[in-house]
Structure formats: C-alpha cells, structure tokens
Length: 357
Image 1: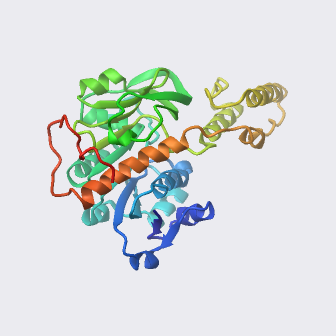
Image 2: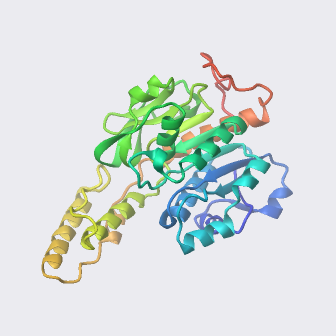
Image 3: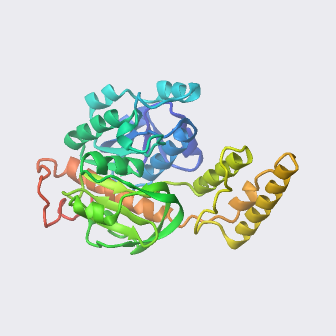
C-alpha cells in the first residue's frame, strides 16, 4: 500500500518518480484505510542521509499490506552534522520529543559512522539508549540495522562486537535456519544480503543472549535475528536495504581516498558483487591510476557507468519479503491483537499466533 507524503521531504517525490505510489497527505486523510506510523531514526552521516531515507522508505512502501504508511524521520542531536545536513534535518525531520508524544507503531534504526573503538564512547551512545529503551516499552517492534544491532547487543545483552581485522565487504549467500518464524514466511531458503562492516557479533553471542538466529551466512555470519519474545526487536547485521549501486559508491569513494593519499592501500574488490568483466575494467583503472600517481598526473575518471551496466541486484526481493512480513505482523498486533501484551518470557508457541497480517 502507499506511502503518505506527510511532509515536504524530497524523498517522497524521488520515490514517486521511480514509480512508487505516494499519496498526498490531504488525499490520504479521505481514504478509509488504516494508518500505520513508522519512525526512522536516521543516524547516517550527511552524505548518506537522503539515500538511507529512500532505501528504507522504498522497502516499507513496497509492503503489500492493507494500510497507509506514515514515515517519521528523526535523528539524534548528538550526531555531528555539517551545514547541509543540519538544514535537511531542521527542515524535514521531526523532533524526538514530538515522536515520543505522538507515538509509533514501529521503528527502524539505521547504522552510523563510528570514531571510537568502544561504542559506549560515541557521543550518540546515551541518546540512542534512551530511544531504544523508550521503543522497547512503547513500540510494537523495532528493527535495528548493522551498527544499531551492535549497540543493542552491547548495552542490553552485554555482548560486545569484535573487530574482524578487515572489512567484510560484499554480497553473501545466507540460509534460513528457522523456517517456522513469521518473518521468513515465503522467503527463499537461500538468499543474498550485502554486508559492509569492520566488526561483527557472532552466532554464539546471539544465542548466549537468549536470542533466536533466523538467517546466517557461512562467510558473513549472522544477518537476521530476533529478541527473546521473537518480535519486539529485529536485528539486521547486513544491509538488505542497499540499492544496486550502494556498494559501488562505497568502493568508488575508497578509490578516491587512495588517489588523494587518504588511505595507504588500494581498496580490495568488493566480494561477490562485480562481474568478471567489471573486475577486469576495475583492474585496468587501478593500473592507470597508479601510473598517473607515479607521474604526478591527473588520475583517470572512475569507470562508474561501465560498471553499473554490469551490476545485478540479487537481494532486494528477499529484503522486500522480510519487511513485508515484519510490517504485516506489526499490523496484526497493533490493529487486531493489541489487547494481548508481549510476554517477558519466550513463548514456545507463536508470538503472534504465527499468522501474517
């Protein structure tokens, strides 16, 4: 069902141009359709702020549920932002106090850039805990992405992430390990997910915390897990929301950093993402770039368009299906079963009657 353009946020018009159904707020109010209010705590840096909005808004808008979706983006004041980022937030984002006052049906929390070896030293640490604690008591379900997953695992479950010693960077095959859970209903038993991180939380750590792992990769580890009650908190360790070109943009940025002398080594090729032809093009560009640097010449232009033509998206359909299941079960609880509270203990049966909304 459609997204509702409840503000002038440019993301709405961008998604409408892509073919997404977006209703004007005034028109939506005239429709006899249930509304769902979903918050997006966007902690990404300025350069990725709008792209992250689009990625998560797009997934929610593609959910095939009988509801109109009102998206409420907000961020944390503790996050450092430049002039453009501050302007975007001040103009289009909602204050945290307003989010608390009006309430939400569900919440999505993005990843963030970190600068400290220990997450508890980050300036966003305490404000993020406040948001997650509030959501735990007031929101049907919270979906944590990547860094948010690591933060919750540390402060709520005492499981601190470990450095990999390298960047886990690529698209990896995952296998569903619990096929009975409603979040993976109708999902392929094997599916791809992009990852982009230097740290990880292992399956042993998820299980030691009493959490249930739903999907994992032999190479990349756990991607999808849920809290003790199987729904209140949903954990992503990968990035299923990524666009086709997201990893390419990251790779291009790192190549430019190398060319500018901001990193000493040439970035490794993103795993399981580039075709053989693309890898050959990128290797040729590497040779030309190193030659230009040795001669103090202007570096060659990155062959972005040539690579885009060769890329394949092998993860979006599954991401859409999981978000569809998540939204459906949030709807089921908030509009049908809301009189039945969540239980603190793990229910060996189905947390939401094992039915989809």
